Amino acid sequence: MFQLLRPKQWIKNLLLFAALVFARKLFDPQAAITATLAFVAFSLASSSVYVLNDLIDAERDRLHPEKRHRPIASGQVSSSAAIALCVALTLAALGMGFRIGFEFGVSIVIYLSMSHFYSTLGKHIVILDTMLVAIGFVLRAIAGALAIDVPFSDWFVLCTLFVALFIALSKRKAELQAGGANSGARPVLAQYTANSLTAFTGTSMAAAVISYSLYVQDVLAENGGQFRRLLLFTVPIVIVAIFRYFLLVDSGRAGEKPEETLLKDRTLQLSILGFMFIAISAFYGGA
Image 1 (cartoon, rainbow, N blue to C red):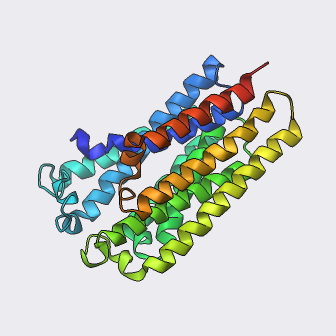
Image 2 (cartoon, one colour; image 1 turned 90 degrees about the vertical axis):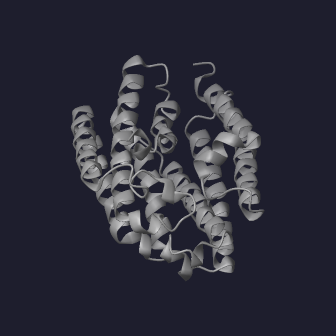
């Protein structure tokens, strides 16, 4: 039953902590506790989405060499038990969300509504399917700021959108390379082409780098202190990480499971650690 929650996917919800770091609230006990509770609430919400998605896709998942082992597709968990779990997770997420704050609770409502639309209809509409996935990450970034009641940068939101779009399009590219267009597991792949996905990923990749660079420039324009200027060194790290991921996908070594790639690839891990070290030094050094 626990496997049905897809705990590995909770890594996506770490994005809720971005506002905590960039708003210089990392060492504020109350803000840290609130952000952690927000992470738990979003993890409950996302797990409810995964359960519903597995219910809807059970027949298609049985055609996939790996997804056929999922609890519902394999028959390990009954549909009635899965529905009960989905309802319980949704109620728990909403209850916790609105207790944290009204605006944060509304963000969970929007996330659930959009995600359920994706599960039932959106994932069958070419381009919109990846855009909805990307917007889900944007909602996480904004929700993290709403939870601890701090402002968020428009450039950071745009950067989140483009990075998420890049990852979502890369996943479609990897699935297409693996022959997914003919598997029946994801029908929307038949509407994509290898050339179009290469162009889409390249565009989103460039937009992500540009928007992050503009975010850094925006931060420096507000406060260009000695330590804050360290943020400039995060730009090449972001470029290395994005290019590395693109290379892994293009060579067929990753893409279908982004979270596993993140947990296994040493270059990406070092890039993230380097980024966090420099970012924390920039925002908290000399404070």
